[in-house]
Length: 173
Image (cartoon, rainbow, N blue to C red; front, side):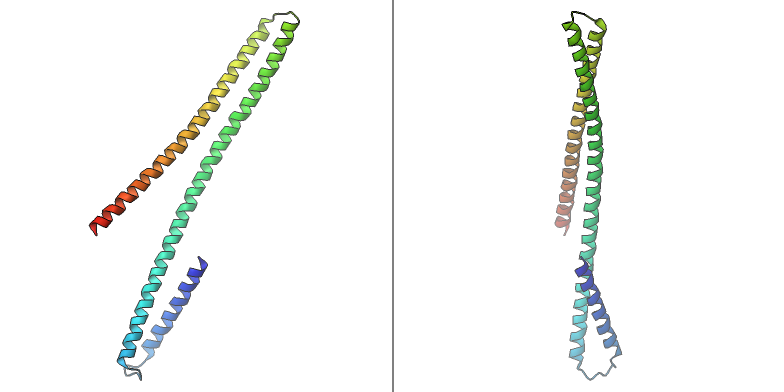
C-alpha cells in the first residue's frame, strides 16, 4: 500500500515539474510545435494514470476499512457468545457438583437405612436445577446457531442485491 502511495507521489511530482517546465517555455520555444503537443499528450496520459491510481488506492483503502469493520463486529459477536457460553458452563458445573453431593448424601442415608424425605426433596430440586441449566445451555447453543444463520442470510441478501444492482447498471450501459 505504501509503494502505491510513494509511486503516486513521485508521479505527481514529475507531472508538476513537467507542467512547470512547459509553462516556462516561451511561446516560441526552440522545440517544434509537434514536440510540445507530444509532451502535452504525454502529460495528460500521466495525469490520467495518476488519477486512476489514486482512485484504486482509495477503493482499496475503503474496502480494507469495510473488511476491518466487519471483522471487528464478528470478533465482538463471538466474544459475547463466548462469555455467555462460559457463564452457562460455569453454572452447569456448579449444579453438577451440587447434584453429586446430594446423590452422595442420599446414597449414604439409604445405605444407613434411614429414609430422609428432606434428602430426597433436595436431590430432586438439584436435579431439576440441573435440567434447567441444561435447557439454558441448549438455548444458548440454539441462539448461536440462529445468529450464524441470520448472518449468512444477511450476507447472501447483500450479495444478491449487489449482483442485481450490478446487473441493472450493466444493462443500462
